[in-house]
Length: 118
Image (cartoon, rainbow, N blue to C red; front, side):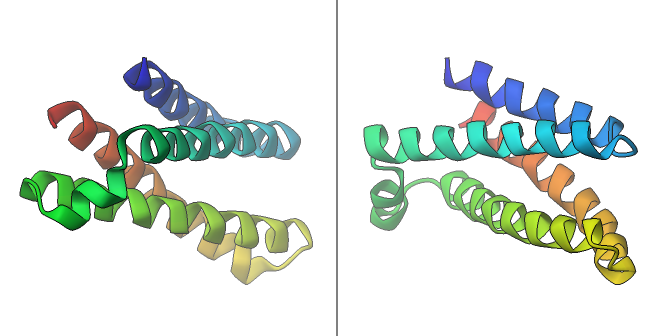
């Protein structure tokens, strides 16, 4: 079930990227992706004690997955802040939002792949 939700998040992100020119739709879809992803992360932490497992020392892939997942969560916040600034007309924020968006999508894809392999 968790992989299904993670797949849904990826689909939402990809559709959100495709809808980037329709701002309201883009914002709604990406906000939904963030909400589902954050809920998924919290569920995994509270039901599996994910952070505790990483702290105890497990396979290197778990460390890699955790680091990428943390980067994705940080990028979600950065993307939201930059997106809000871009909506207010800040061209530099819009440009940075676009560039970091590529990194965000790539890292979220890596999180998905590492979760499947673990």
